Length: 198
Image 1 (cartoon, rainbow, N blue to C red):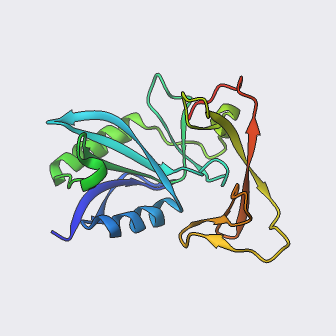
Image 2 (image 1 turned 45 degrees about the vertical axis):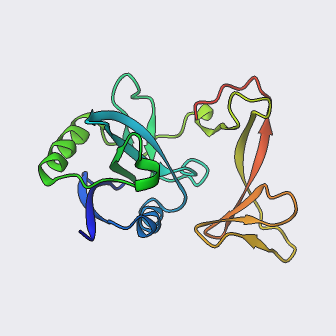
């Protein structure tokens, strides 16, 4: 098997089966291309036999101002998916190592029906909740840090970068500025009393 079934919801389009490479290294590249950069995932629900459906989205969707796509179902309908979303089935215990599993065609059709029913399309003018712009590192530890990403001008000096993918870190000794497709973003620390949602 050279491909596996996944489900892709592109902005403004209906959910559809997407044939993703069966090879984990190629999957990472493909997912990055589909979502427009680095990504994060969340477990949505268990589908049985130790398997769960996960949603993958661009982890910088809000700072990049990606367009609104879909709303989560109630009671989380205030939460909006910005940019494309990819749905994959992972083994709850081995998914991080083995990668996603193939979703049989009949199950894909069932998931597509349920995603269409429950993840309502956005109008297109929705804006992110200000609290969704707050990120947290090292949650629950003494090093816990809250920050926002702010778009900044390109640093004037000659730049060195760490990384070669969609997101590169500006190697200036501090490493708190990222370059994403020619745009620059810097982490801005926030007071701890802010309540993050991510």
